[in-house]
Image (cartoon, rainbow, N blue to C red; front, side, top):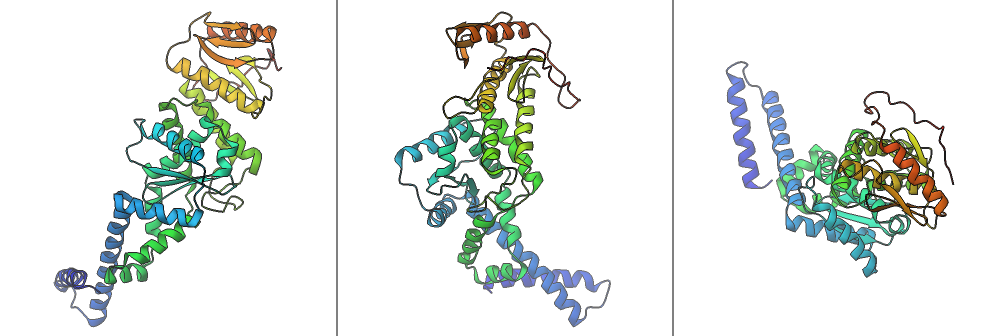
Length: 373
């Protein structure tokens, strides 16, 4: 045990002993218990300070980045690295992000992304291949949210037991803590509450960025379609049951967040986009996108227009197969006849009132004007 820590601990022990001596005569056993208690508290305080430094300092970030790359590998693809860096730069510029982060892409073909100590994030090549930028932005915003809430810091501290804490404090060997951090990165588990809060803040960060808010529900739909309802963060734990909410629930929650963001105007139900309870359109599969993904993107564009107060009666129009609202492209349909129908449905819906808040039981969207193409 180093001299500074030992003298501090003994001073604390003596203070506690003098205080208790005025009430109960001290015994050897009691003094030993007090010393153990005080020593443990000081040891954990030392660990807490060391972990905070690892997370907050430039030196800690550099060490964590090097450690993460050694565990995951580094994707030798300059376009992929530039892509994740560009998205990160956009997200950290939003008002809700208070800390700085570094990101890199790794070569794993699993669908995954993770954040670790030191405000370091890594995105798997598998996620880059499956998601477009709007979808990937939400996944990365979710990981940023873990960093903003310091979930990784708090989780790492919990991994350090009493004997290890005392050993760390006594020796001052931060290498032990670095090893613990490496193991924690591969096996980190967040609570259900932490995951839900990260999803919520992730959506807020996404909504403050230029990315489509429909990317939140769309990314979770892609994840659900590939892996089902069980998913876990970490390095290689995609198939391990965990404390994440069911992915289908995460899709629904992000639809609800989009609805609220739109001022209770825009909803998606069973692949159909609804505006003010009018069934507008059910996009079909197109290229790399499923019809469900396209519905979320269409709804996301309308939600932002409503949020920004840009939707007025009669503001929907079409040119060829493309439908526009307030001059912005909303969706491309198979032909001009379908585009006319969608624009007409939108203009009919724009004169209607918003729906109820999701906190109350919202009426299920009407199916009477279905227009799936």
